[in-house]
Image 1 (cartoon, rainbow, N blue to C red):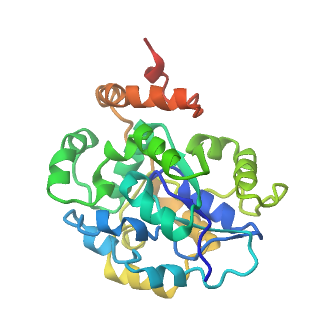
Image 2: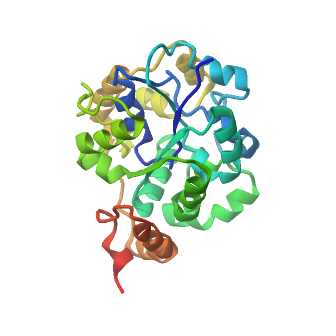
Length: 303
């Protein structure tokens, strides 16, 4: 039975989609057609469905082990077999089961300036017309949304705390590679070489899609087309199940919707300073861990 020997396990909104498609292009790497399987965190996240659109958004998640392993049956002689599920890193109690069933897989973790990550997370739900509050108010509502069993994708602060979760991943898995979205975006080829070396595949390969960007972000004018692309719905889920979403389809989608894109308002100084205070200790610990945070908000490092 074919099974993954590596996992891209998070964090959300940190470039895992791009890395998934870059690795999928490598002839020695197999990635399943479906991203974001979330099988090993089902016990954590399956009942978090009380936010707007949560129930529909979870329909594509993998609920049982047979369905999970069936996604890798087309793997042939690839040296590396992987999957991408950004929820895994947020639930260290899932590591034992994941480690046992996949027999100590290699782990890749992506993170990002926590403020930019949180705001990107917020904009994602705003694009889907699920979030209705301002960013600042939504941050203050997080604990209430947790109590009310919203999906964890609504937890903008929770998803931006890294240190303790990465520490537990390093304690649980033999081989862990930590990257940042910033280095993947700015130095794509060099970062991919790191990943190829980590996975023990040909490091000289350059994917044909290396200059492509995925999940570009931002906001878009509302119309029939953008509503279909971004809003959660049963018709959209059926479409995704019937039609295999490939990188070239993502590229076409991005070209079309770029005509309707506009820049969101920047985070207010007040909100930025509030988040600097919230995340500073975590960022300093991450930096001491050896993660390159040089492209993150300079305010984190002011005395």
